[in-house]
Amino acid sequence: PYLRAKLEVRLARQRDEEDFSIRIAQTRKERLYRAAVAAYPYVSSAWQAWIFCQQLLFVFGVTRTHSPLMWFA
Image (cartoon, rainbow, N blue to C red; front, side):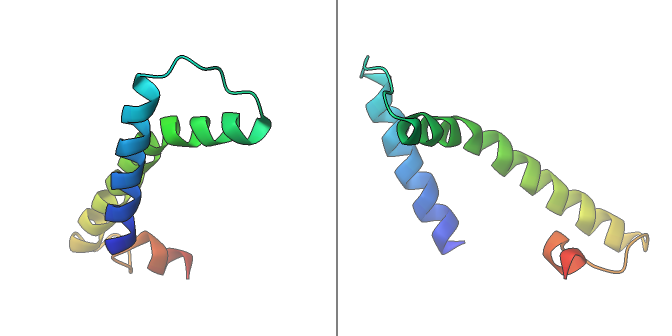
């Protein structure tokens, strides 16, 4: 949770800075970084939905694990 909170604060600050800049990403690294910043909300939402579904399935006895990470392990 600590790292996720730090990452979200940094990405929010980065999005705010990029909203006011008009420069075009020149290097491949900058393009990949911008793509990661743009994709983070969708990836985070999908991960949280997966966690919710996994916990719901665990409550109903469909799966043996309560977490996707435990399922991977």
